[in-house]
Length: 172
Image 1 (spheres, one colour):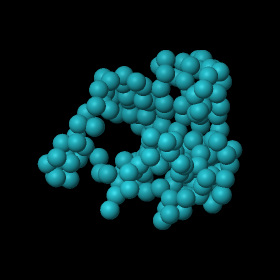
Image 2 (tube, rainbow, N blue to C red; image 1 turned 60 degrees about the vertical axis):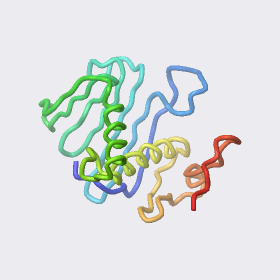
Image 3 (cartoon, one colour; image 1 turned 90 degrees about the vertical axis):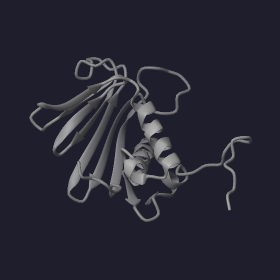
Image 4 (cartoon, rainbow, N blue to C red; image 1 turned 135 degrees about the vertical axis):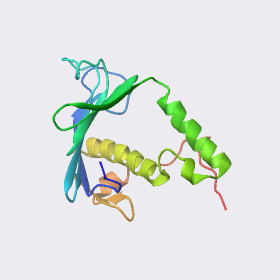
């Protein structure tokens, strides 16, 4: 989609509508990421009726040039008219990404990576930003230099103390 940087702002609506359990994130979520000249919307509706594009579970990612349906076993990329542009099946994608990353670390050949490291960082931060927007019920502006928000409550959720026995080691 050509969006290789952090968004300017994020907002989220959703909730836990299907299971009353200890899970700490919503089962239904609509996240909006605002860029200077684009808007990206992420939609997740686990267990929803009617089924999301005839999938029992999954996520839909909307962009200006199309959208993508991702399930646990397949994915489809659509152009703006709804025409399927690419698709794939299988549930080993995560394993393949991990294997590719470990092989690149071992060989020290960055050019063999399937995804640039910073791109993975941005996509991970976007997931966390969406969940923080959901927890705070606020539209949050993001500072790309500090990777923090314009809101003190939200910034408390950026990092946290680790439980005893799960601390990260100090390096250097």
